[in-house]
Length: 264
Ligand SMILES: [Zn+2]
Ligand SMILES: [Zn+2]
Image (cartoon, rainbow, N blue to C red; front, side):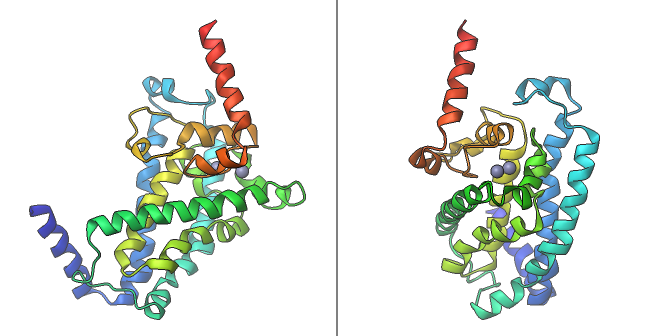
């Protein structure tokens, strides 16, 4: 109850104090940047803790140069490519009559359903477009930038060619364009999507990771294999598209080989 009142107070203070433009533009930018850096932080710290290395999937150190290169590209993507799109949020909320006030907020269970639907739609868009970006005729022009990081770490999640930021990034907007009625969905969807994509790029696999409670969630091991192998496991979140389309065959063989080696 206390938390609910605390959240309600915080939200109404924000909507009373700031204009919808300030909330949708600079507010959304702050939400995105803060979440991105905070979610990346544990993985960044783990590289300095020897105990955590047993959870690392590929036993390769991140390397300072690689992390610096990634950080610079990330800042370019965030502040040159994504910032204008984030600032357009206000226009979008006006056109589609998206609510800001606490009273019109969806219930927590309909919000959860909407978030899961957003994940499914984004996963589908991402799977097919990601697979297309791997086609040999275009791979070297766009998607190769993301694959410069063969052993990924959290920040790599959005270290991509600007064209990829826009093309794959469109998947983020499909769910909101279909059923968003309130700003809270946009902000919680940013949080969920960042948690998911930074987790699968983290390079660390924890069995107790709560994201594994999501049915059919692939996780870090699955996407790490994509970076190591360059082929297969194209879906960002769930395992069903790779299973249906047979693009998880190499991953299954690799897992079987590892299991056999462990037994012998
Ligand atoms: Zn790829
Ligand atoms: Zn990746």
